[in-house]
Length: 241
Image (cartoon, rainbow, N blue to C red; front, top):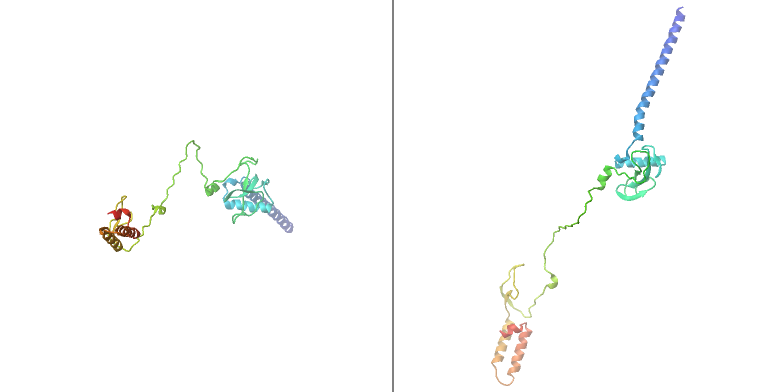
């Protein structure tokens, strides 16, 4: 009797253990399924317009692993892949996922349509982060005239093509300067300096001596003295004085 009772008790314990283990396994399976469901739902409703550039690069790597290309539906977003592009080089589009030929980075996928699965050929979405990186700005269109203002620093200088170099034809000395500094104001005809030229004085003395002479040959001597004054650099106005 006792042996039979022990057998029944042992069998009941085994049955309870099996039922408890099955219930625990069923609960764990349902819990894991519930935990995995939000992740799958989140992946299916992922919004590419909110992706950062690194997230876009990771999506491109996933497309390479899964064999996806432009025109295919991305199972992670439910959207059709329109093309691939480099965010740093706008205007260049590619049909297959790959590394950017311009930068040391992966291309980023561009999806057609909005949040729905249906693709819209005329819609292109650019994420706010990419807009910020590209420096995109929008403004209201108004009618008006454009006025361009240029502010630049510069130096004022004289025209060197109009510069005249005065060279003396005889040795002399500067006795007085009437203009002492650069950019001093001067007037037309005003003297710049007073010169003492010994050769001029000698030529003047020869001319005056010839002018006092009389007789044959006096005129030729005066003409020769006058020509000498011209040769040493004296102009006609100075000679007449």
